[in-house]
Amino acid sequence: MSILIMKFGGTSVGSADAIDQVCSIVKSYSQNWDGLVVVVSAMRGVTDTLIQCADRAVQGEEEVYQSLIEQLKTSHNSVIDEVVSDEVERQRLSAQLDEYISELDAYCRSIHVLGEVTARGMDTISSLGERMNAPLVAAALRGKEVKAMSVDASQLIVTDASFQNANPIEQATREKVSEVLIPLLDEKTIPVVTGFVAATQDGILTTLGRGGSDYTAAILGDSLDASEVWTWTDVDGVMTADPRIVHNARVIPELSFREVSELAYFGAKVLHPKTLRPIIERDIPLWVKNTFNPESPGTKVIRTSPSFEGKVTAISTIHDLSLVTVEGRGMLGIPGIAARTFAAVARQGASVLMISQASSEQSICFVIPTQSVPAVIQSIDSEMELELSRRDIDRVWAQPEIVIVTAVGAGLRHTPGIAGRVFSALGEANINVIAIAQGSSEYSISIVVSAEDADDAMRQIHQEVILNG
Image 1: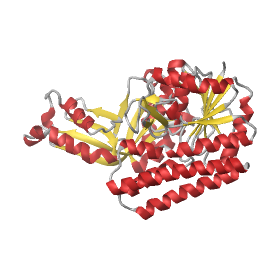
Image 2: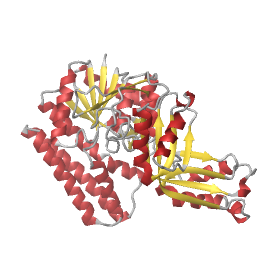
Image 3: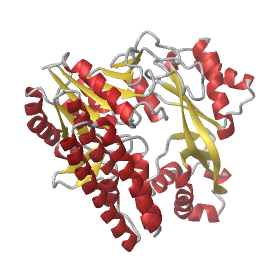
Image 4: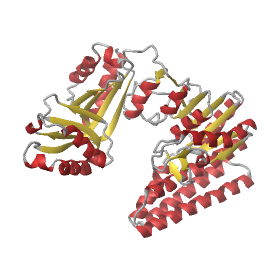
């Protein structure tokens, strides 16, 4: 059975017109495959609003979260009225929406009383966007004479109890997916599945992390042995750079899995970083396409590197970071400083995005999200209390407002002159490089620059190394 998985992101289902476009795309491809599964995100901005509801409830701002809840109800009802013409269907959807809104209101009232929200509670709240949207999209498809049924992914994807960033349990998920989806596909019914959402073996709702609808599509592709996975977004494919910053950015026709993994890790917004894992294992081709320009071929992501090996393929950036430095002349020759430093970081659950250490061993620097800095520095200070007191370590400090700019391409490490060209391009623009790292993966070179230089750095590397490469 040839099965296609299509995932539509928040922008693709963010309005009545967008949902209508999605329905046209799904209908046009539905006859070309033995089975078609659609995965949908929440409507654009809804997940952020849901999280804001919980945050305002924690702060005791009842009027604010009540207003946000009302906005969600109004916006969804408005879309229902526009995309669903059948009166009975419309009333059923509105009633279902009321149930979800009442559930949200009840959760927020409880949070308001308790003054806190757990990770498990936040999963339940943040999942409501997808759970409200999937039935709406399924109804819109039925209105286009496409046989469709909404399916809550909590009935499909089984995970551990790592709330807000759960990990799928493969065999249990395959069994559930086969049990629920295969009969629908055999009946030529298109399942419209909630992205982002899952559940533990005990049925407790979890989520796969922000942007997890991509991951849902990949998990379903793996579980169904799909022929291809297509993720639909609002750009024509994976771009050589962020087109909002680099106006002459181009679509990349073909990329390797490893290149896209590096881009996803280093901030590219096209794919969720975890998405590629199940796809790579099954060697399932992935396409990135534009919902609003479906004629564009998009970007194909495949296992092996394409013909651009040895060149910079694309640039991505990560913002809102700080560079933490542990330094001291007395560090030289003291074993275990790096291990203890990163153990202290790990205790705070902070994500280390890049590490650089001088050969003199007199400093270690690493990049983490700025929001983690106070807790991380306090943890390191506590861990190194003795070394700080006897001046083996002079200080632990952070440089805020820095950005990682990463150049990605197959086989960069074995291509002479690439790093030199990157630095020459930055030097010509008088951009100071704060730190550098190149992994043994051979697929990326990362540099740290100040936030004010980041956009210029991206444009300069794109022009001198990609376009003129």
